[in-house]
Image (cartoon, rainbow, N blue to C red; front, side, top):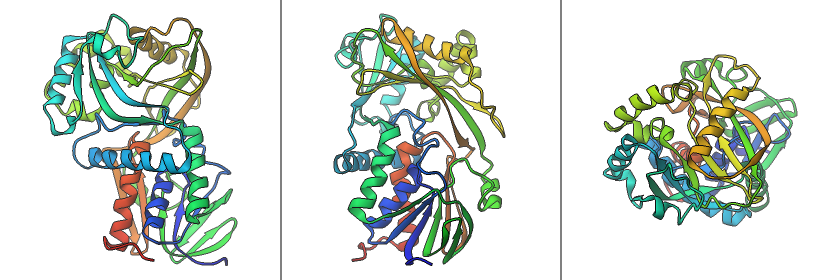
Length: 378
């Protein structure tokens, strides 16, 4: 037995790290146990795009709005570069422009505005002439997730005393005791953040969440000539997929037209997100395929569809593909799932592709529910 801690967190992905931050900010001691030797799951296989605009109304949007602010605070403290800010959701069809106008009439559109193509090019000079208008949001921020998660963990350890145990599988949880392959630990409270893992711990509780694994494809391209993206870029397909837009009546006409004109994209859950890295390369995606056990194989045809959508919106010039990868996350009817196997244990699963965008808000809410909303313990 090593020294007890107030909180033991299973999982060092972004959801686990967000709970660790919320706990140490409340004065709790924290240990994080991760079975891999580094976080290698969905938390690093994404855009590093902290998205507020377009999240579903209600608690999802509220958690994203709060998480965005925490990301900005943490990035400055932990030495995580913010590579660009803002979002341009481009429109190429009148139906897409109608969705933008309808969104701007909602409470979630504070700070957002509609831009002409000329105005949008002040943010992203390489937009094509296919673009007729754009929704601009100043809220979004972009980090390099594959390095940001590791830097966040290191900062939590160095600045806040969080203890990390990597390369250890948690075998059983019966708070206050936690059995792992690295020995037995003791904690007043245990928070399990399993990501897509559904069988190792609390399988009954996770099964009740009815989430299905979602496989996505992403890639990185390097333009032959330097370009400046200036903001995260999305397209008509995103306006027909993100719940903050699909909740709107205007989205029905857009969805119908896309079903007719881009049926393959719609069937494969493809929509465009493009963000830029410090070396000038672009991360582009993504697709969505659902299966109890997703196949580990990539599809060149899906890559071609995603890159075709990029080419329709952004004039990158010639480019080469430098990286390709697959990510898997749980997807369910309820985007956020919590279970309480007992008074001292919580299971937290984000069953949607918005963990990086919402985790800090979720962590604060979970910790407040466990320890109350009073002042942090000294």
